[in-house]
Length: 357
Ligand SMILES: [Zn+2]
Image 1 (tube, rainbow, N blue to C red):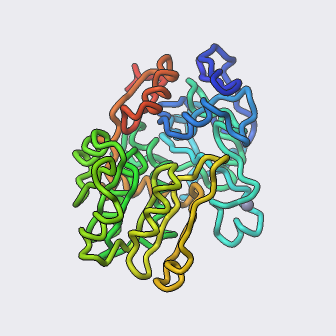
Image 2 (image 1 turned 30 degrees about the vertical axis):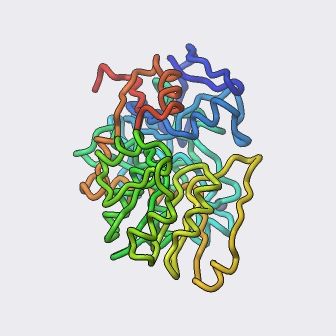
C-alpha cells in the first residue's frame, strides 16, 4: 500500500510499504480521511521529540473497519466492533492508569503516546488501531449524518473544547481569538456554541483574516498589520477588555498582547505553543495580581473530548464541512503539507480512497 513516511526533517517519502496485518486486540482500518494540521508542518520542518522514525504520519483520522482482531473488545456503548463500522480515532493516547489519568486529566498524561508518532498514522491506505487506543475508549462510531472528512476534524475540535473548558468560556463572555487558521476558526465557532456574547477574531495577515471571517463570521475582526490589537479590543469593549483571550498562534507577542487586553477576572488561554528555543514571554505580574487574571495552558485532548467533538459536529452546533477547503488524494500529501505551511488553506483533508467517496 501507499503511505507517507517521515524519515528526518525535510525527508518525508510517499512510498510503497507492506499493508499491515491485524494482531489480537487491534482493529484494521481503511483510512477514508486524514486531515493535515500545523503540527504536520512542524514535524516535516524540524521533527518532533516524540517521533520514532521512520514513521507513517497523520493523526486526524477517520476510516472504516476492514478487520477486527481477536479480542478487540467493544465500543463504549457495549456493542462489538464489526467490519464496515465507520469510526474516528483519537490522536493522543493516555495510558489511563497514572495518577493524572485517574484524576481525570488524561490530556496531560506523562506517558502519552500518539498516532503518527509512536504508532503508524493515517497518511496511508490502511492503518492499525493499536490496543492502547482501544484500552482508553479512543475509537468512536461516526454519526450517520457525518462524512469521514468532517469526522476527521473531531480531533482538532477536541483540543479546542479542552482549551475552552479550561478557560471557562461561557454565556455572555467577550472572547478574543488571536490567529485565524483552522484552530482559530474552530475556536470562534465553539465560543458561539458555548454562548459567548461577542467574538473578536485577530490576525496579522488581513487577507487570511478576511477569508476566515467570511466563513465563521466573528462580530469584529482586527488586522494587526494596520491596527493595535490591545487598543482596538479595549475600544470595542468600552474600555473593559475581554473575558477570555485565546492565542491560536505560535506567538509570544500575541500572548503578551492577550494579557493586556483582558477584563478584570479575565482568562488568557495559551492554546498555541511557542518555538522550543524561544519559550519566554514578559508578564506584568501586577496586572495579573490586581485584576485577578488567570493564565491557563492546554495540551491536546482526551478520548471524551473527541466524543463530544463528534456530537457537536453532528448536531450542527459546530459545523466544520465548510472549513475543509482542500480535499486531496494520498499522492498529493507532500503538496498538502506545503499548502498548510503557506497558509493558503483552512483545512486540507487527505482522502486515500477518494474513488470510494
Ligand atoms: Zn496517564
